[in-house]
Each structure stands twice: as structure tokens, then as C-alpha cells.
Image 1: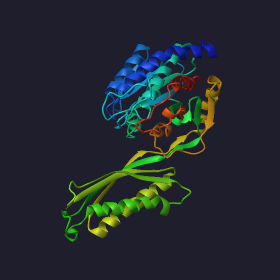
Image 2 (image 1 turned 180 degrees about the vertical axis):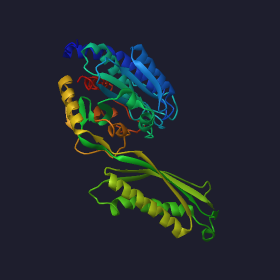
Image 3 (image 1 turned 180 degrees about the horizontal axis):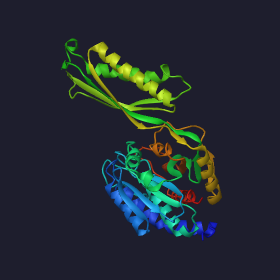
Image 4 (image 1 turned 30 degrees about the horizontal axis):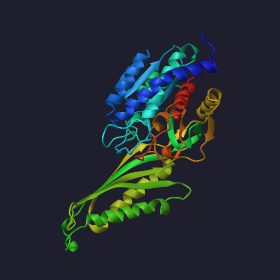
Length: 394
């Protein structure tokens, strides 16, 4: 018989889980691993799951991990966290915060916190298992930063293995103070594609550009033209962000190279607009290349689709948070983010929602995601653990 859960029971379970959360988070932060390389992170989390007595399946879609708390209820709620880090040198940390021990790699998007909080939720729900009315699947995803991990896990059958009726996730939010959880029904995050342009021309001496096909000039014209597309080719009521993040050409000041390239990302909130901007990019690149006699290769990798929070699942989630986190303020997010998030792949198949966990407030915690000085206020950790656990208390 399922016992009635009291607030004091949840309080005690969260408090008991925090030592594990802090240790796991510290280990993950000190040893960050890039997308597709999360071997140590997955092994650490798998060990935690086995220690808690959960059924653990490893190697799903790469280093993906599924831990299951199966009480034979016949209905399952899934909770998901990402594990990978970024190729960013970590700047000095706030006093007492864990520091990356890997040069050039850091958890500048909070995935160490996401995974640690979900491990904490595993312990909380194990402690409260006799009060649960659903089975719980804990999904630890690799390769979110390159937006391939969710699709890989799904292709490898993670959803068929647990068959959830709901799926939820949290993402830390430095723009929200600790004690606030942001929610939004409908479109939450933009579709985000990665693109690359490779150019080939005719190199030569810098003193005789008329004997060359100058791919540096061609690349510059392409970049300027591409940046005009969102404001001149797209309805202004449909936001599009196009950013070039990398350019490469040549090695000497007095040599015109025969090759150049650049890469970037394009994001939008509307699938039809997304198809339009892709087509305009392709036409722009090849028109300019033809004008100058250069060869152009344009590749676009379809990454994360638009993330849409299910209205009913979001309402249910907010109801659970209101009930079980009475001291936390729920804040409706007024507009979508142009950031991409491949949790969208799960939400295309299972109703659920992505929530924003306030992790900022003080100045040292105000740096944005993907910034070298990004850090979370650790007071957010027990709130995140409690919130994730609450989402399974249906």
C-alpha cells in the first residue's frame, strides 16, 4: 500500500541527499568531459545508481545512461539531465567553488549541476519509494552541447526501454535569482543549426591580387551578406539569429591563400522560417562564390529543433512545484530563448517541459552561460533536487 507523503518526509530526504549531490557535483566539475567523451562522468553516475539499488543501463547512444526506479506502478515519469562540458578555459572561481582540473575544458553551462541534482533526486525518490505512485526513469544524456546526444539516445531505444508518460528537465539560469523557477508553456527554445562554408580559390602574391581569386575577400562578402538576411529577407515578427563564430584563412601577411572557411549557427522559432533562412543562405553563398570565380561548399547540420513545452504537462509540473516547494517563487518566462537545447528531441515524442532553475543573484553568479566566469550559487542545488523529485510525485 502506498503511504501518504508528508512535507517533512521530503524535507528529510532532500537534506540526506545533499552530501551525495555536493560530492558528485565536485567530481564532475573538477573533471569535465567534452561532448561524446563523457566516459568518467557516466561511470561515476552509474556507480551512484547501483549504490542506490537502481536498475542501470549504460552505453545508450554513446555514453548515455538510464537508471530506473521500478515499483511496478505501470506508469513512468522520466527526468533528464545532461553531462557534457565545453571547450572553455575556466576563469577564477568564487571562493570555495570547485575548479576544473582539465586545461581548456569547463562546465560553463552547468551540466555538472544538472547531473548532480538528478543524482540527488534519485536518492530522494529511493528514500520515498513507498510513497510513489509512478515508476521513475532517470536519463543522463551525453553530447548536448553538440546537439546530438538526445537523438542518439532515442535512436538507441532509451524511450522504448522506459516508456514514460511525462518527461521533465531543469536548466540553471544565472539571470534568475536563487529561489525562483522559471516556466513557459509552448515554445521555449529556438531551433539551432550549425553551418560551415569552405572556399577554394587561386592563391598568389599579395602584390598581385588581380592574378588570384581572393577567398579572403569572398569570405568577407559572404559574412556581411549572411548577416543581412535576418533583417532583410525575414519578416521582423519572426526572430532569426545568425552568428559567425569561427573564421580561418591563410598563414602569412603577404600571401593570398587559396583556401578559407568560416562556420556559425543559425537559430529561429518557426519551422517554416527556418527552412526559408536555410534556402536563402545557400543561394547567397553560391551567388557570391560564382561572382568571384571561387568554389564554395556549404554544409548545414540540422541540430536541435524548436523546443516546445507541452501545455498540460507544464501546468501539471507547476502544480507539483507549488505544492512541494512552497518557498520557491514560480515565474512565467515572457519570451522564448534563442538558445538551442536538444531536450527538444525528447519533448517531440513525450509530453513534458524544460524549467529554468534560478542560480544567480549576487554579482559573482551573474555571468551568462558559456562565459569563462560562469558559476552557480550552490544554494540552488537543494532547490533543484527537490524540484526534480517533486516532478515525480504524481
